Amino acid sequence: MNREDYLINKLSSSYIGDDGAIVGDKIYSMDAFFEGVHFKREWMSLTQIARKAMLVNISDAIAMSAKPIYALVTLSLPKDITKKDIDEILSSLYNTANEFGCEIIGGDTIAGERLDFTITIISHSDNPLTRKGLKEGDLLGYTGILGESKRDLNRLLDGKKVSPNSRFIEPILRDKFIELSRPYLSVGMDISDGLYCDTNKLLDYNRVGFEPLIDIDDSIGSSGEEYEMLIGFQSDKLDTILEIAKEIDLELTIFAKVQNNSRRFNCINHHN
Image (cartoon, rainbow, N blue to C red; front, side, top):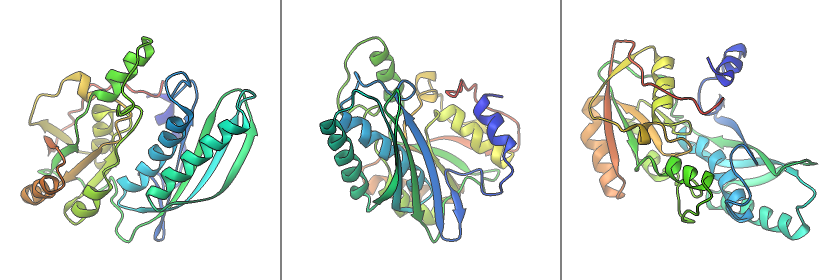
């Protein structure tokens, strides 16, 4: 068991288990985005860094079929960050939040050794999409094309350049697809730790296994920070969900069927 799972297992709140905590009709979620852990400043502009920090947090709301309404932002600012840099960071945070109708209502600022972001999102949903509810016979699918994020991270680690539109730099959130398909989905979560690891989380949470329907290359299954959607649904909803994806020109891959077994992907966890 890695340290993240160990820590989560030590917490006793009944709200833990999904991308966010459901309290009434509100959902509370928070992610950190730290220099040296999630990014290096030589890889991305401050605008790109701040935008991704906000996107990966809003992704949790989208994954639960919720509308982000408020954000709280804590910034750790190193000594070499200038007032002009702060203006660039804040502008990117505000612009990105505004795209999704989310208002930044406060937070905190501290002096630190690195440029670090910690963001809390408060969102609203009348019908949250959770990770619970997967049953034998259901189908598992994922949106978009996976693998680019890990590929480009490796390029950056090798000192190479990547496109500004790379999924590692600019995640795409599937809010439109989730909005349209929500009535037909049983479970869902965003793919942050890779398809293999996140599918295993979904299976563990529902105490089921799977049978593969297609072969998945490790470069696809182990690519983290994709922020595409992993979904599960009853097999009789397949045609409807495929039609929704087609209408919005979204690639959707059905890769497994849920079974009553203990089968899991060979997952290399990113939280070590």
